[in-house]
Image 1 (tube, helix red, strand yellow):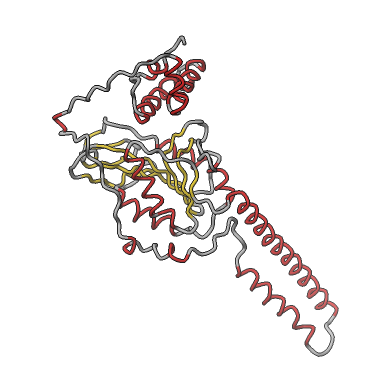
Image 2 (cartoon, rainbow, N blue to C red; image 1 turned 90 degrees about the vertical axis):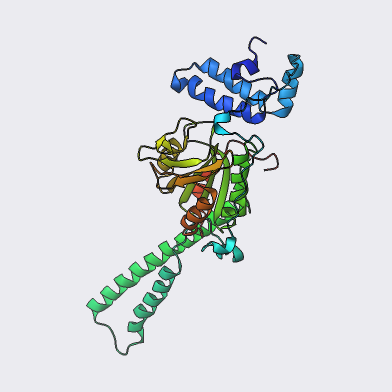
Length: 358
């Protein structure tokens, strides 16, 4: 081959899937045609990532190129930060009973895929019909002018009944079609297992938010206008959508300012970036009827105090897992009785990779 995929991505031949993914994401920002790169180079980069991120294709590539893996060299310890390579952040352990919305998860009420007019219009129609029938029960005959007015009102009421019936039938058809399309699925896409922050967040979403009756969880979403998995996770409840990104960073105090920039301990943060600000704006434009927000979940990379200011900047808040479960859970629970089939279909279309059995 003319180009070595490992050299193109700038990784060793024994690089882990997480290292390959990180290298690819960094190069995409530089080599995408929109960023000044060429389409040919970008296609080559994409081919390299798709080959090396798939276990079987990578093995075939290594055999074809007669690759001899080099022994992994231990990374030097950065003493100034007292790194702990073996440290794994603990999972979220919020007691479910402490969550005011947890009672919604116990009985799982029937969730509709389309909003119906509700019971109030039907009750109003019945009451109105009873009132319109009163003249027929009164003794004597109606004056011609009164009779004409009464017939006009009856005709208008009949037209309203027809429109209402059509609304109920349309909602019932949409519900049946969505059930046939989505079944009982509540999780779409495949969650990354590495780094550990991705695994912790995936577990958190399933253990807590996915238990809300109308919650639908997504893993690996492409931003509107993109074909790559730009968003790690998302949760949809009714017309409320939260986009989630996981980060494994050093202990400290993190916040997102009004311009969407990251700060740590009162200084601009240079140790990482987030694409949530752009993703929130893109999804808000893509789904104008949906309230979209972003949550940047931060996990410690070593022992130490980790805090955040969850005040949103450009719709994105830096949050700890426990904060996320409580605050975002409260927010989503307020609209969890309906799954809008149009929004669900639009979100599913953005899932980059589905399970093999889906």
